[in-house]
Amino acid sequence: MSPLDHLASLLRTGTEEGSRALAVSTEIDAVLTKIRARAKGSAPQTLSEDQQLDAVCRFWHSQEIASFRDAYLLSWGLCLPHKPSGSCVLEDRPRLEAVLGGVDSWSARPSAFRRCYQGLAKSYFTYDAFGGNAPATARNNWKLLREYLHDKNSLIRDRQVNPDWVATAIGNRQLFGENPCAPYIDELLRGDASAIDHLCAELGIAKASWFLRELVLAQIRGATQLSDSQFKGLLPRMLELLANNDVLRDRGLVMLLDRYVKVPGMHLQQNLRDWSVLWWGNPWLPSNETRWGGVVPEARSMVSEWLKKEFIETFFTKLAEDGLGDRRRMEFWTRYVKAIDRIEFALGSTARNARDRDFVALRKKMDGLICHLDASGSNNAFIMRMGDLVAVEFSGMGNALYGYDARRSVPFDTAEPLRLPQYDHNSLKQKNRSILWLSHQDGINGWSKWEQMFDAKLREEFGIKPQTAATRVARPSEPLATRPPENVMPPREQPAAEGAGAGAEAPRHYNRFALNKLANRLGLRIEDRTPKGGSLWVLTDDSDPQVSEILSTWGFQHKADKGWWR
Image (tube, rainbow, N blue to C red; front, side):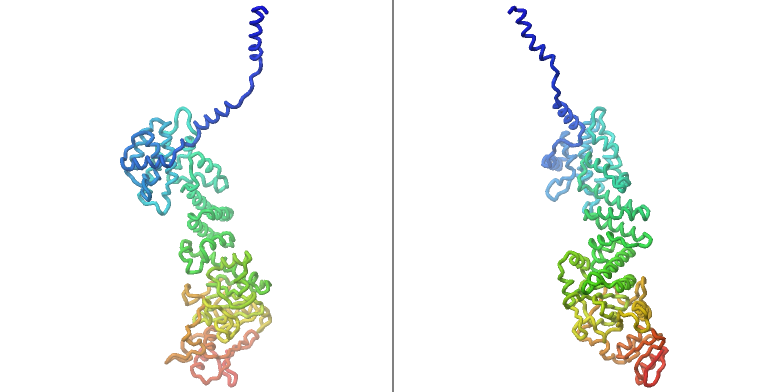
């Protein structure tokens, strides 16, 4: 082979290799993407808390910032206590001003200054100046930091490459103003949280930040300022926000309740009722006074009526004997929710011991209202205080309504086990001590329906009307029913005090309640024939001059061998 051929063979390999197409590789693209992300990303260089704490401790004693690294570490560590249970830089005005002065010396170099600015912003969103434990001086210092971030906001932009978070911080400068949440409320109420998600990701706002907490309250405040229909539509979502936030719950619920009470009709909002009772307890129990004290009285009454209505419906359905619902009694008493001051439930063994989920939830909701009924099976009782009347209904449909005078000693004590037999100790069925006994039967005493008779009796004898608050003399915080002390005889049998006769406490003008009270005290028998067009009779003679005087004053006339009629 000639030297020329040998040279050609050597070059041939290189020529063939050069003519081949180059293989496509994406490795360099991935590297470039990482470089760009690192240059424009929001994440700072890895900073351990130990590094920040070391810088804070050195600065706490020297109050000097010797290098940019010190200024950088201190910016991120403003909220770290300089010692266990000690103060942080943000809570010390001179030291905070010294840190801000040290950071400010780098403001002419955006690439350096913004690294410190990012740390200051992180500290701003971390420190809870709105919390109840924050000292007043710390809140003022936090406002100083806020003003600094607001005023220096434009200095973090560089003419060259800027991290993405810089544009976010400059574009949302109001975050460092007095109303940081305001611009985002409309979008949040529409269900769009994308702007907030972007802010948190770019600026490193943690989930525990006061900013996200105040956003919740701002949404609730914004919802309360909308029209009735818009507010009602947003109410379930507002309650869900509060359900996941124990800290905001009370403040937010007060705003929602105070707003809903202004909605015409105040129709039942089940979620609002259930969450309110779950968080604050029964609205009419004295033990829950503090929890309910923040709302307007109308809102508290609204929830009370909702809850009473639910309890009435539950008693005559869920707690009904043999599981048979009694809609007539349920519908009758739901009309009287405004007149009912308080409710208690005397539960028999079945309702007290049932373990299924519905009964467990029911007993929890009735907490503070449950009495022990010493009765087997599904026997239960429903005790209502309406003005000066304590009325007792029973789960069995064959039982009558018993009514007792709340102004005198009610003959049973709900703090002790209650019973049903008439002559048992602490019985709910003491007909001889009652001032009202009504049967749930139609066609009695000329009334076509028992509901009409009940309405008339409650209205005429006790001044109790549907959808009207009952009047009473006793204080609202008194127990619903209390048994008289052991050394005090029952009212009918108690001897009169010296100088007191049958006319003691008798009013000048007639009312049926006063007549019932007189008859109860003296053992007089009353026969009411008025439903059939007859007269009202007191079946006693005229041998007692004081009784005769009272009945005569009240317009009764005496008929020999029969009694007094009106």
